Image (cartoon, rainbow, N blue to C red; front, side):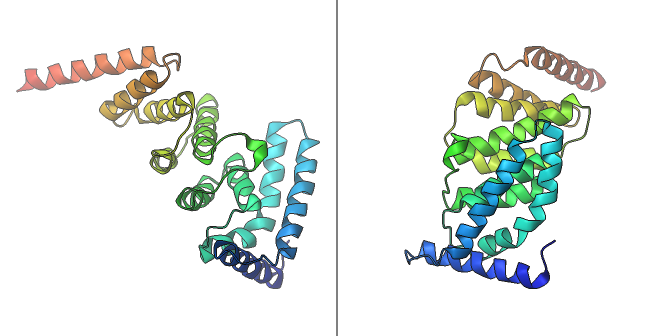
Length: 224
């Protein structure tokens, strides 16, 4: 567990590194380099685990150790490229800390931060796909998923570039989640998903929503 003094030190180091890098000043990179070494070591531990469930559990255990660094970087607002910050964004999604991940995502999009090379996708694409995949896992397991997280991911990535198939996945999950509460918006989301990628797999859901909306409209007119 990170002590309060250690946490304060990491927050201060992250804030200083972020501001210095954004100002084009030479980094006093020792602590950042140590964080990169820790990240590499933790990735090796994760690589040795085959179970995705066990990987997620280990990430939940590791993430508090990174929290002071993340807090310092975000609070400073310098917008410096930070591989630790970007990796933790994805880990938070994997660990189920979606709100914490979206806080980093908002900062990353604002400052146009890139993903580390091993992700091989743009930042917007990573945010959209990882959140959509998390929503799908919850749906497949008949577990709830926070609609606001999908909506926030959609809003954050709306103006970013990504493959159409990835954006379609986000529209699909948002539409399916909306289907019980806002059928009109759900239909719009699913139609948009199909426009982006015709094999996204929601044609039956679109037909069902169209039928339900038509019947509801007919009932309203009949009642009038």
